[in-house]
Image 1 (tube, rainbow over the protein chains, first blue to last red):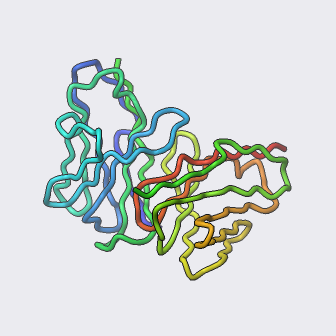
Image 2 (image 1 turned 60 degrees about the vertical axis):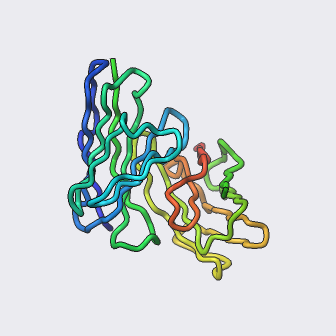
Length: 117
Length: 108
C-alpha cells in the first residue's frame, strides 16, 4: 500500500523554541494532507487540513499562528509548532490520501512525539 | 453536526472468543464507513471500508456490518488472538474525524 513518512519520530525541545515536523507521501501525490494531535489514551484530534499550494484549513480551536502548516509540493507538508510550551507536548500524526478525490482509505505516518521541556 | 460514538472505551476478552466493537453515528447518512487499527505510539492502519449498500464485509478474521437504519456499524474479530490487542477506530466516509476508539485487550 501507499507509504507516508514522518520525520522526526521523536523530538525534545526547550520551551520557547520552534519545531518543524515533516510529512511525506513516498509513492503517491497528495494534494491534501491532514494533521492530527493525540494525547495519551485519547483519540486522534484533527488539527488542520493541509492543501498543496494554498492555505491550510484549521479546525475550530486550533491556533493557526501557533501551528504553521506549509504544503509546498504534492509530496510534502510541514507542521511547525512555534514558540512551543510544555502543553504542546503530544503525539502529532499526519495522513494523506492518494489522488485528488475525497474518498477511500487514509494512509498515516508513524507519528512524531514532541516533548517540550 | 455529525457525531460518531464508539460506546466502549475498553473491551477485554479471552483468546479465541469473538470481539465485537460498535460504532454509532448521528446527524449523517454516510455513503461508506471505515475501520482502522492503532497500536500504541504508531499511526492508524486501514482495515476495512464498507459501503451503504453492503450489509457485511469480510477480510480474513475480520467482519464489518453496516446498518443504515440503526446508524450503526459493528466490527467483529473472530478467533481473537493477543496480537489483536490494539485500539480500533471508525470514521465516516472520507471524513478525517475519528471516533474515540475502543481499546481491545485479548488475554491469553
